Image (cartoon, rainbow, N blue to C red):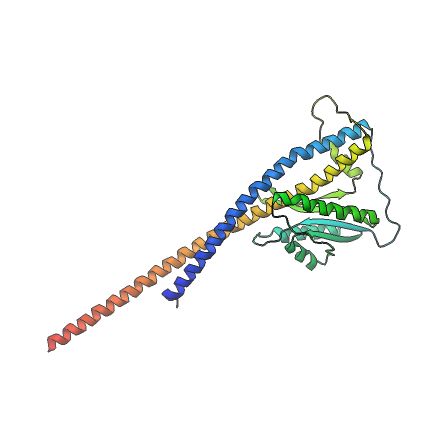
Length: 299
């Protein structure tokens, strides 16, 4: 049976956890703002880069992109997957559902798969799913740190393509979506093939006047493609971080609600036991007084 002392200890413990949850909830809410702002800002920049590529292809009359030559060495063709997960917990099914999605998609692709996980927890889950996690990246802890991570991933991709064994690079991540909170998605980052070229056609040129490419053609194309790859990875990372913090905020909200209910029940039980203890003590005092009174009357 619960005693007042054990209940008091439980209430103090739950109150301490409630304070931690409240702090984490505040931090998650603050982080969501900066990442959502980054995602919103990237939308316009991403569209600008795409329109620049469309203008270039139109002026240069490029309607088809030749396929890259595949490696002649058998068994060396690889597909790399950059998977944005989390380093920290308390995010619900954020990592688990993404791992299931990555597994399903990669199993349908030909060739050997290697995975570049971003986040310690997603790395563990992908390793348990028997994927070759050759490289591992830490999750950025701020918007400013995203650029450094994107640079590392691009260097890895470039080096792997120069070796001639890597055939494609895919990006997997969670992104915000209403009303379910988030959804998992993926895109092919490299190579920039004909399917990618067709995907640009969904963007309509604003206005009637077409842009012209100024200066040397090759440096212009290299700059546009470089920015396209950079902003694609940056956008995926920022969306993943916004989703992670939204998931943590939702988890903290559920935890807060559960702790509030638990504290309410324990406080109710504590006050009931305390009142029962007081009643018992009063009953003992009254019973003792009556016994003493009867004794004095007999004397």
